[in-house]
View 1 (cartoon, rainbow, N blue to C red):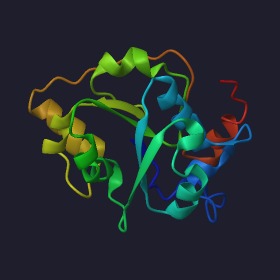
View 2: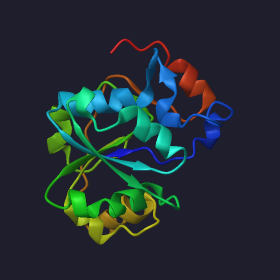
View 3: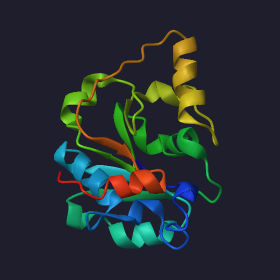
Length: 182
């Protein structure tokens, strides 16, 4: 799943007419990096949640054929937050572990190496269906998911990534991501 429903408020004025996942980094929309990352890991079915200017994202990405992926979209009439967006996709994700990537996180991580990393939050998560027990619509993945997993004494694992990572959430971080080479 690629989380792409955000409002992009911290990147205004750039996001007044363009959704954050379509802002260019090195001449490519940010969402291309997330789609390439899941494809490289051998993942072929992708769900993208949409809200703010979501039609532009859907028009750009399309069916996913040019990426070698099958893409489904879930539109959120009212933004559901990270946890709520994942909960909203439960019917498509409840068969086993699944990957969740923020569309605005640029990272050179090898997903094949972290798929055994269980639960994490750095813009990339590998989640088990038990997460749906804790998530509601709307909700925050950290508050409703991770903190409740920890309180229930369920395992939460981490993976230490020593490569590139950038959450393109502010104008300053957006500008710093423009020299990517991966």
